[in-house]
Image (cartoon, rainbow, N blue to C red; front, side):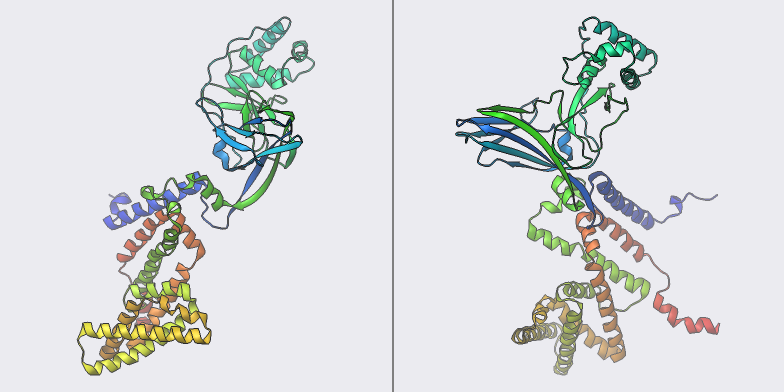
Length: 512
């Protein structure tokens, strides 16, 4: 009997798959749910909405209030700004009351003035209120309006199956201007808008409806007014409707500013108050949007949010999080390719130094230090020193060499030579010691081979650890460390041929 797939896997493979699944799952969740980009150069469209309040001062104290967007609409806002021009500003939000901005001034100049409120909005999905409204009371319609409304509601009820289909049928009937009942309804002139009249008609069927005032984000606008839009609730969710066509939905990118009333501004001590809304769009890096919202990092593993750390610590982790990738490169080059190196960490740290010295200068400085240090180490071998004192002596020699290169570079005006101090001194000392031992035990050829292999792996690690896309992924998606760990575990179980062994056994294969 054939076993299931997971039953045929080893415990190591199962652990590696679980680690990879968790790391990739958290990464995809962050990308899909919180809009954190996988590539740093990705951009997104952001709309700037500006509310302008114009008025003329009367010379005395003044107070101007602006109703701000509701809480559900603020989930789309990534930034907001107030332009007060000498006015005192207070942002008030009482329980159960909408948020509002209040500008005050003791002596208001007797001239035309303007106050501004700006919000930057992302996304095109309309944010609606999740609360469930109560059923409205039936309005006390006057005749002949009452009979006309009841006739329309009765016909709509016969041709519908639920609240939304009832609304659509009602709107379609109201769009028929030849119907006598519709003529009576449309002659009512004491409503702020036709949308309010439709909401009152739906209240006759005990259907919750309201008017949302907002701004469509489709094209740039200048000094525009808010657009009224009908919303209907079916007991589970709100849905918008175009009262002119009866079609469900909202205008593109509709940003809701207020419900039920267009009365956004209250003012005292000023006159000729007017308001207008202007919009424009720009493209900004998607990473800036994710950083401004703050919610982009809500799924960091173990609650870690690297962007909230001090800047100096963030800079440190930009480097530290690349070290596992360097270790993965070393493991792959040694286990799969078969490149010999002097230890495991030496190529990683040399590659790390190359990030600051640049590759060409780093290779030149590294080879110069190692060659001079190796020559001095072979001279020390004649003194027959013990291991620990010999290593300490090599360390002193390495420091003296680095100091000499730094001073000489400074006098010659070579700034690249000043970065020699970035090389890890202890690793250089251990490398020189290891090279000398290999030289004595296995000869010059083996030493040259391992030196070339170490530099090759360091160069590969340099390109991987210096790749800006990988640095972006590791810093903003640290859960990918689980994927690196999974790959490292799988490499640890590799027991096949190395690529270099294919050349060694090539002659034997051809002879067979």
